[in-house]
Amino acid sequence: MPLDEFDLIKKYFDVGTISNTNVVLGPGDDCAILAPLEGQEICLSTDTMNEDIHFLSSLSGSAIASRVVAANLSDLAAMGADPYACLLAVTLNEVNENWLDQFSDTIFSILKRYSCPLIGGNVSKGPKLSITMTVLGSIPSGKAIVRSGARTGDAIYVTGSLGDAKMGLEMLRSGKELDYLVSRFCYPTPRIKEGKALRELASSMIDVSDGLLADLGHLCSASNLGAELDIKSLPISSYLKEEVGEELAYRFALSDSDDYELCFTIPKMLEDEMKRRDWSSLAPFTKIGTMIPGNNIKVLSEDRSIIEIEQLGYKHF
Amino acid sequence: MPLDEFDLIKKYFDVGTISNTNVVLGPGDDCAILAPLEGQEICLSTDTMNEDIHFLSSLSGSAIASRVVAANLSDLAAMGADPYACLLAVTLNEVNENWLDQFSDTIFSILKRYSCPLIGGNVSKGPKLSITMTVLGSIPSGKAIVRSGARTGDAIYVTGSLGDAKMGLEMLRSGKELDYLVSRFCYPTPRIKEGKALRELASSMIDVSDGLLADLGHLCSASNLGAELDIKSLPISSYLKEEVGEELAYRFALSDSDDYELCFTIPKMLEDEMKRRDWSSLAPFTKIGTMIPGNNIKVLSEDRSIIEIEQLGYKHF
Image (cartoon, rainbow over all chains, first blue to last red; front, side):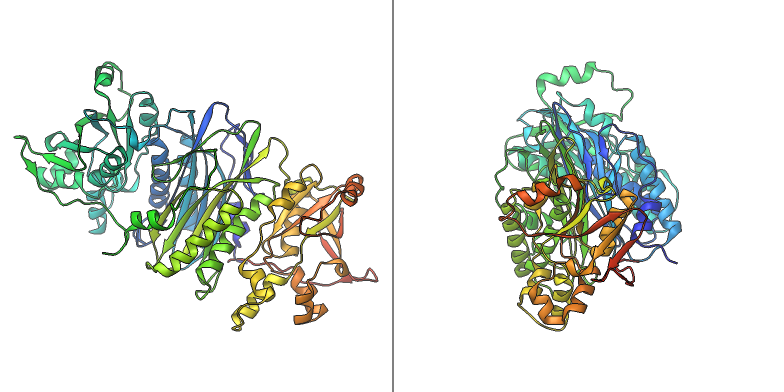
């Protein structure tokens, strides 16, 4: 007898509770129940990934799971929040138990790493695979790092390196399998630790999910400011530089690469503090520019001439 | 120029905040932020509706919106919770502004009625329309009404009437337009007020979204009990009885009708209290049976002989 939706949930999405004292009631009732968090606010975000749009049909269950969880946790990271709990709605076209095994194993292994219990969900049938995750994070009241807090003169930083995921996707499309750049696309790391470490330091923050120019553009527009970027300061991995050369690497770093790095601003008066602290256990922070008046992002070459770059960033419609 | 996802969100899904002091930060950042609720637990549920599976492609934007919100709020009602906030992830195949207008107007008008702000969401492209809503509710700590609390001898009740939605759907399929039964399918009422009123009275509760037998079955299995139903006591609307006759009406009431009514149990010692209270502002409560030992649901005729009924209820796979 084929598995029905209730069997599927039991077998693949209710496999052992991730120990978390905040969960009063886990999956299986009309609602899950979470305990109140004294002195904490709750951050929430939801993100959908669709077959053929957000990922190739051929992508493994494990890579899809990694990308879905990372995209969602990355939104918590971008507020400086701690993962608290999540819900998962999966639309399947057919029941492929091998795929489900892989997908579910990966989901739970990542969620466990972040002590983020899956407290509820939904399994339904549809024309193509579609996954919507909703994440909740906790943050001490008033401490969330929003997009609108940047001020003129604030330094702009990013975590890790940029552009890798875009190249990884292109390599995957042309049939390449395991490789550092492919793994940056398939298994992104949500920058939760980094986001938390930036509480009380960053004046604004966003995650890079649609490309640096597009996402920094959102931060600028929320802060009513412009930005100036030094192209040579963009953090490019040696792998990317080797694969495509310097010029294309910078282009990838600016355009629609969903690296799930954090882009944040630091007030001038806290820049010394940034240098003083020991960040060695975290992904590197690189200063890439400065917030300026206006509403444009200027990308400057070494001699400070403006480089013309079409505003790139993934758009659905 | 066609609307991109950010324009779509701005135009259709960020239209005026529903006033709610719990919302620290609404849509537009990486996450929304909710204030902590002292002494309250948070109930959460997520539900997906897919074109061609959960609704006909021809169903109006307004009816789809009503069904999505009702299905989600109904899960809060089934815990006795108050709506607190929600998130909405919409996958569209194309941008149809008329449809979006209708859909969004209806979503916001219902959410306003329940003081439930939409605090975040996602718009993406996919092969067919798919909508995933995540709802949060609040409930005083320890007061949620779960499925597992029923005891032998507890009386089983339902709100409103059963079977209407199934007939409504059949009438819609055969081309009928406006009618009471069709409206019961298209515009279900989540029983929020009723759920809240049953706090400290009901020992267990579930909403009827897959049919009475299926959902009462979930409640029985969570409570490790069986149930005995008196078929003649099932609340059937006069419209349904008139349309299909008594026998088929009972069958519809038991089978896969998603009426979004509540099914709940009342301990023997509280039955007098049930009779004493003034419920006149709520949907009617009807006693339909009793919880018994075992793990089966017996449906009894007037002469208390067992009626054989295949276990019905919608299953996806």
